Structure formats: C-alpha cells, structure tokens
Length: 560
Image (cartoon, rainbow, N blue to C red):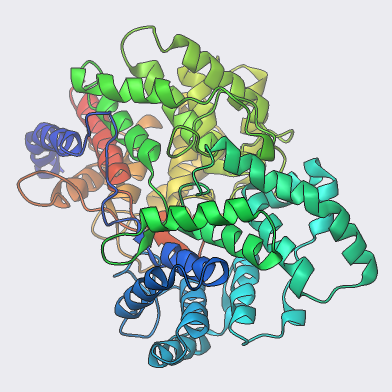
C-alpha cells in the first residue's frame, strides 16, 4: 500500500497539470472545447441524410446520395455490420437502417454490402432482438422502405394524439418532431381504418405545427437539432407525406451545406456538452481562476436560452447540448449551473438563478428529472437517476440547502428506484457504474453518506472494481475505462473513503497508467449512449474532465 500511495503522490500533480493543458489545447477562441472533427461523423447521420435526400430530392441531390452510398459501403465492418461511429463494434440498429437504406438507394452496386448486413442481422437475432422497442419501430420503418416488411405490418405512429398536445409530449418527449413527421407519411402510405384516418387528418395540422415550432426555434436553418439523423427522419417523413415543402427544401439545402469532404454527415456537434465537462474538470483541478476559462464562461452566459421551447412545453432559462437555439436538456442545464457557480465573479448570478428556476419547473411530480419534458416515461429521455442527481448537484452548488423540499423529494424517488443489488441506472451513459457513482456522490454531498441507499451503492461500486483496479460498466468481464474509473474514484472519495484505501489507490493508479503519451491526455471510451443499449459514442472532454476531477479529489485528501 505504501508503494501505491507514494507512486500516486509523485505523479498525480504532474498528471493534473498535463491533463489540464491537454484540455486547454482543444479550446477554441470562442470558449468551446472542441472535440468534434471526425469523431461525430456517423453512420446514423449519413443514413438519415441519404434516405431523406432519396425521398425529398432524388435527382437534384444525386451527387450527394452517391457520395453517401460510397461512404456507407467503405465503412461497413468486416463482420458485415455497422457501428454508429466507424471503427467501433457493430450495432444492430445502425446495421439494420444502413443495410435497408443501401437496398433502397443503391440496390445494384451495394448488393454485396446489403447481403452482408442482412446476414449480420440474422445472426444477431433480427429486429426483435434489439433491446429497445422504439428503435425496433424506426428500423421497421426502414425495412418497409426496402420492401422487406409489408407496410401494413409497420408500427403505426398515432397521429391523432397530437390533438392533445400535453399527452402527446409526455408520450413521445424529444421524439415529437420525428414521430409527427413519420406519422404524416403514414397517413398517406399506411392503410388504416376510416375512424383513425379521420382523427389523424384532424390532428395533422397540430403535428405539423409541432415540427415547425422546433424548426423556427432553431432559426429555420434547415436542420433539426443540428443532427443529420434527426433531420433525415423528419425530412423523409415530410417529403413522403407531402407536407411542409418549405421545410423539406430547407433540409435539402442544409444537407448540402453540412456534408463532409468524404461524403458523410454527423450526428451533431456537442459544443456545450464538451465544454461543460472540460470546464468542470478544470475547475475541480484548481483552474477556476485561469483566464482561459473566461471565454468559456462567456460562452455559457451567451447560450442560455431566453425564449420557451414550445414544442416540448419548456419555459426559458435552459441550455441544450449545442448551438444558440438548441434543444433543452436537464443534463446540460444542471452541469453548466454547477460550473458557473464555481467560476469567479458575479456576472453569472442571474444565469444561475434562471437555470435553477428552470430545473425547479422541470422536476417531475414524482421527484425525478428527465431530459426535457416533465412527467414523461419515455425510454432514453424519461426519469433518470443520473440526470436527477446532476440537477440536484446544480441546486446544491447554487446554495439550495439539503433540507429543501425539492431535494428531499428527489432523494425519496432515488431510494425507490435503486436496483436490488444497490446499483443505479443511467439513461445517457452505459449500464450502472456511472449512475451508481453519480448518485453516491450526490447522496454524500446532501449529507446522506451513511444512509442505507448510499451504503448499498458504495458496496456495489466497490464490488464492481476489476482486477486491474479500474472500473468498467459493471458487467463481468468487460474492460475498464477512464470515465467509469474516474466516476467511481471520485464518488468513493466524496463518500468518505480514505485516499489510501485499496479501491481508491488502485483506481488512481489505473488513471495514471491510462494516460496517452507525453501530452498527458486520456483515451475516451464509448460510454455515452446516443440511444440506450443500441448506439454509443466517445466524448474525450468527458474522459479528461472526469479524470481531472478524480485526481484532484485524491490530491486534496492525500494532502490533508
């Protein structure tokens, strides 16, 4: 133990310094810590663009379609599947829509790739083996495009529910624009009863309004969510439903303006997500007063939104994950409030107050937080332990006392959703290590480190440590990652574990060993869920920010 302790003490300050400079090297002049580049160019984004252009502008966009087809063929995995980000392990949902799209737009030249993709899907178990019902519904839509599924067997998107906007939002949440567009297409192409058709026709204007509200909120740029997959679903639905031609034409222009040099499209920039995790790690590591963070502070203040997001029923005061008019998110709002509260000055006070007010209004009646729509239960954006404690951290950082009813209500909800083994889930990060660590950390911050939920979470976290001292996603046999190791180490320290305890010391040693070369950075792993259990991606700012926070916590406690 003495050897581990002295090794960590000798290296940890150097690791923090080099890691901080590695983060700052990614910072743009406008304050964004930019980890975009090629990392978010995605199969899903390219499928979305190619399929939409095929339905919306097949002749005028033939060049873009051909380039996208070529990219999809080149990035197919050796096993016949595709991953969301090329080079990763093949994923069922991504493979299903990529193979179907190639079958639709390039059946002759991509016949071999289509056949290989279909074999991969058959070996996987088909669409029904995908562990996400909504993803299965999207995939069945693409299978119908390809003629692999009778259109009558497609899941029907209930357009008539748009007649009750509040219910519509709670049932479909962030998917409202996509569901609306695809439902409009089904109104034209899918056989349904006279009764349902009459209701759907009455609801069609409201569904179109929901799509347009998002379109106009983002400045009528032609893209939705700055995401080619999302934009593709909406554009294809509108084009096939012969609705919103101005928005369809805008999307076609947007696709032309956002295609990469090699013929692909991205699943959207994450300017604020990258920046909040980078800034949070730097603040924890003692860089709050570094003048380089001044531009990031200005970025956060500039991008707080001051108008409501009508389609999701959200009041103003939130942040999204990108852009000046991005979609609302409890996750980003909570994290940015926490970062702003720890930066010097008082010009952020009003932004913090408005962020806390927004989070308060967004808290579910049950005490939890989801992504952006109150009281929804939709998988992938509904109530989430991890998002809930991110909101609680923001309230605590803003000075809300642990005795506050908002916090008490959330803590009671968390106690009720803890898994029987003591772990917690997470919607936007894989499996259980992230959620369990995040909840344990917040329970300790709220003065509940000795309560039963915290003790059970801590026991699970300690039991999930791998033989090499790192943490993975909590399932046996998986590799450790920087992100999950840092989450666990930081949570254990916050909950009172000694800095030289085996779990903490070996975890720190793992973080030090994971550094990549002389620049002192850390490798990012695909722990971020684009669609839970289905598609994942990496976020280098998250890896760096979490590693800095864990090492800084260790250094602070080791120096006491």
